[in-house]
Length: 223
Image 1 (cartoon, rainbow, N blue to C red):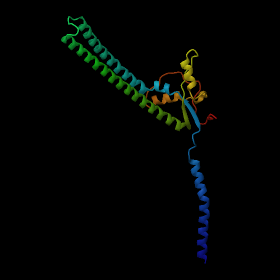
Image 2 (cartoon, rainbow, N blue to C red):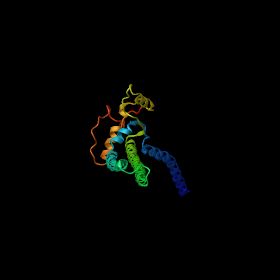
Image 3 (tube, rainbow, N blue to C red):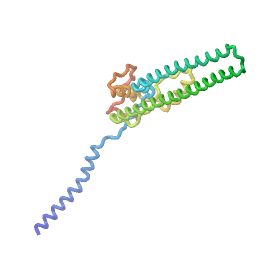
Image 4 (tube, rainbow, N blue to C red):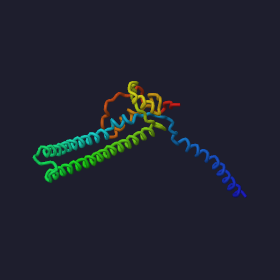
């Protein structure tokens, strides 16, 4: 009887401890879970992209290719034009077989020239699009890392520029922006620029910093 009594008592204690252990474990798990991000931030993506080291380096290389291609095409265009002028100044009679043969050859060269120019334009446009895409993906990844580290739940793009009342286009662009106003402390443009350079071991360029420091953990979110 005593043995049965101790077994019953042990089981009872285990049940009681189990009942109270579950809430305790749950509370501990809740306490260790990271707090949900509550801050918002603003960034001028155009400014970050313009100063991004990857973007500047590859745009500079692309500009050099375009300049070289333009020089080559100008020389080619001059050659075709000189042939046309030479034919007009020749003693060949317009409409004669020899004249028509040279004229057709010049027209063929011009057709090839225009085709090659369009092909090159498409290639350069595609390369420029690729540069912008890869730069933007890197910027978004940098923003994501910064946001996770600082409890930021949302980042909104905003163009920082001063509209000119005498320029209807600039006024329209300013009015088209969804974000009407924000506290300067929410601007993380400079922080993201710095991080894109730091990730590559480079010194960021000197540009005017925002009037307020960016949002940091512990600051009150925009309400």
